[in-house]
Length: 325
Image (tube, helix red, strand yellow):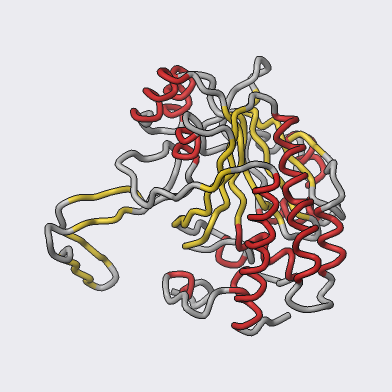
């Protein structure tokens, strides 16, 4: 299934328009993204932005090895997990459409849903209840479908059925352990390793509507989440059916500075000092999710891959995907 550049712009623009309307209905305030950060996120694979001193940084490219000299270095965003939490000191519900850059790992070039540069709709609010998160998220996506249906860029492509699926809440919920069983992982195989791409495909083909995976053992995730009394983390994935895979990831945020520090070190890094100090001072408990915008557009449009809907003006590293470089 192919899309022209004009169709790509229409689908992306209208999905974003409908999503913003639904978020407004649910009283979420849009905030601006912070493009650079002095702090990293433990477990995240950051890229670095180098700023020059009143001049462009010196760049050397020698046979594919690039070195840069400048005055300052900042972390580029892989998500806005920390920033959106800190914004909740001054608002009750926030969201942000934030640009992200992540490195592709083995198998992700052919997944149909991974990009180097992409946009996340990151949503956060004050709550300590995972069930509330599930319900609010389902209502937001149901509202998106409601607003998108009258302005679909084109008829056909099965969009009506997929929008009906988004409106079909409450979505099924399964634990991570149940997901492994449904995906066919044997009991003697590791039970605290995330789903492989093949397992995820097998699992999502068993569902006809979106569904939740939640309650992950410590060590599966590469981010910080609240840990329950049973040792499981209060984190979740929202999955799309028919092989489309993960749409959104989130969780209840750490309870306190101690949990931030302990989990950061388990991930092999030092805690974000700004985040830990803010948590200690504010004591604000939040939860939320980051939703892949391109993945949502792909699902609504019925595309086989997010690459089919790549904007014509995107000349960055996404153009390398599938080029064998």
